[in-house]
Image 1 (tube, rainbow, N blue to C red):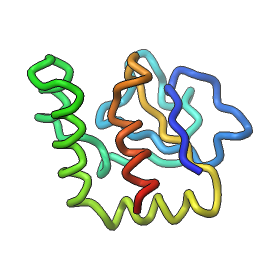
Image 2 (spheres, rainbow, N blue to C red; image 1 turned 60 degrees about the vertical axis):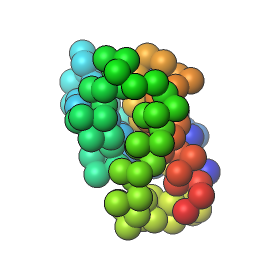
Image 3 (tube, rainbow, N blue to C red; image 1 turned 180 degrees about the horizontal axis):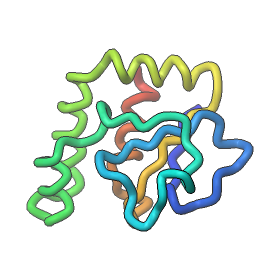
Length: 114
């Protein structure tokens, strides 16, 4: 099972293996305060793509398409996490305020289809 959760939410017993999937460390959070098992920068959007989305140069649909193309280049890392998710819960941690349109949701969907 793969689920997504904001880094600012309390860690829970059902979170399983917690993976930070942001390129940058979340603002206002000390590294010692976040409960996580891994920081997977390999599966985060490129700086260029992230900046284009946050500046609203591209919309979510274009961002999603471009991000999936980037993810395809890191299939080995994706397969590793997808395999782990078949054995236990994997929680993808993200800092974005928008919980309905963010890269972690795209990543979770991509991982479920590997």
